[in-house]
Structure formats: C-alpha cells, structure tokens
Length: 359
Image 1 (tube, rainbow, N blue to C red):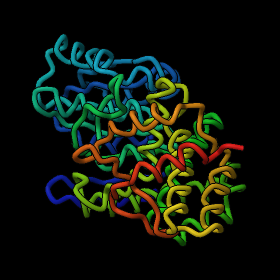
Image 2: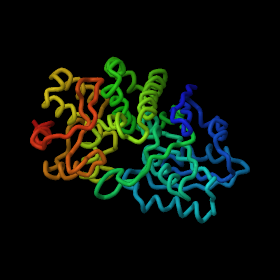
Image 3: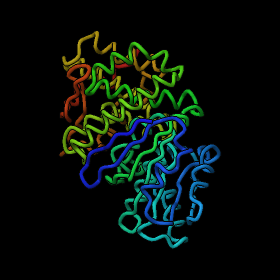
Image 4: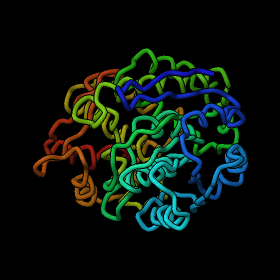
C-alpha cells in the first residue's frame, strides 16, 4: 500500500492506494468520529462492493442510498434523495457520508456532504480509474445542469481517499480507457517524463498489468495532489487540470449527458486543444500528432461529434473559466507545459471547430 498526503493545512488528508483495501476498513474507520454513516453508491457498484463496506460498521447506524448508474443522473433531483435519507434518519452534522463509486458518485457525495447542515464529514472510496486518478482527489464536488456541466457545486475536501486498485478488475474496457484520458492529461500539462513513459507502456497498461497500474495511479495522484496543494480553489495553476475540459463539457452537454463518458469527451477535447495550440504556433506538427496518437492508442475517441460550430461556441460560453463574455481555454505551449487560462479569438477557435477531425 502507498500512502501520501494532500497538503492543505488543517484540511490535509491521506490518500491510500493499494489492492484489497476494501478488506481493511480500519483505514477509513479511523477517520470517522460518530456512529452515523451514510453510504452513497450506484446500482452497478452496489452489487459488487456495498456489502463489504456496510458490514464494516457493526454497531453503527448505517443508511444507504443507491442511485441509478450514469452521468444523466448527476442532477439536483437525484441529489435530493441523499438529503431525504439523511433527514429521514435524523442524521446530525457529525454524520459521515461515504461516496463509493466513480466520478459521478464522488462528485454528488461530496456536494451532498458540503451542503447538509452546512457541512458534514465525507470519505471518498473511488472504484473507477478516472475517479482514482482524478475526481476523488482535490475536493471538487457538484452536479450538472441542463445548460452546463458541473455548474452547481462547491470545493469541499474529504477526510481521506481510499483507492482499492482491485476494484478496477471489474471495470469494463470503455470505462478503463476513459480513465486514461485523465492520466494522459497529467503528462501533457506538467510531467513530460510521465507522458513519454505512457507512450512506451500504453499497450501493457491496457492489459492492466498490476505493477504498471499501481504506478500510474500513484503518479497521477501525486501530480493532482501537488497542484491542489498549490491552488485549492482554482485561482491559478489548478485551472491547468481542465485541459480539454471546456471542449469536452460542451460535447457532453450538447450530445446529452451519458452519450459520451466524461473521459471520452475530455479525450476529444484534448485533441481539439492540441489542434488549437498548433494553429497558434505553440505546438509543432510532431507534438500535435503525439498527443492525438497517444489518446488513440489508449482506445479513446479522437474525432468530435457532429455538432454545429455555433452550437459548440454557445456551449463553450458556459464555462467557469470564462470572464466578461470571453472564452478562456487551457492550451499547450509544449508537451508537459500547459498555459493558464487564455482568451481565445473566435476566428481561430472556429478554425479548430470547423476543421479538426474533418476528412
């Protein structure tokens, strides 16, 4: 097992990474101070992993909320089921919420914890690659709105993150590849050595070699933890973690939540960001091709959907990085070096939207 800390002063917390950690409930029980526990999960994960988590709390008052599985259920309507259960059980502000699942459950669980009685403790137990390397770390929580992804939320840090790599054995290939989009992102924005390593090891990684997988999760979490420690509330360098996300969120919203997995949309958006960076003269032909080639090698989509340019622009205008009506994007000065949010001229952006991925 690997353990390291997200350094945030009084809000610092450990990340545990290893195989079989769900059978070691003492790792997360030590952070729970009350006898009231609510476990939030979805139908898919519940069938696999809910029982061992719940059974660890003998002598506790344990409630469970099991949501449908999918991005389309990441809404205020379904979030209200968590509040209904907490209130029905008369849980107090010392109750602990455990988010057991992928990115959707982690985001919703964290947001519910941030809101209930103005904040209760919560723990992340991520069960997908994307959640283990990205969304469970850093305290971003929230839900989607019909007009924009993740537009309703809060920064709220967990007590700990428990990443049991054995849960990835039950992950389907599509979900596994979706997680690799966020892994590749770390190499692109700040860790060129990691990017090169991924180029050299992607095929073995796709075979889920346990040693390589453990290394990838640890290095990704370390990258994320360092960025979050430097900029918890995304006023500076943390924004670089959104490489490809403004394009990707537009794809998710425009095509309907659930049509693309988050990582799939981010992969396409990262290709578009690389194309735009190339058009601005920041990436050369070889660098642009390397970005797109590695994402394709990870078995991720690299071609955007049929979405009209005006509609794409309209959706990109609903983004948390935008200021004063200006679309601001994270782009690449080079592989391993991301920009901070930059204002983008619509005419250049249109060139990417109209030409990238077209035959």
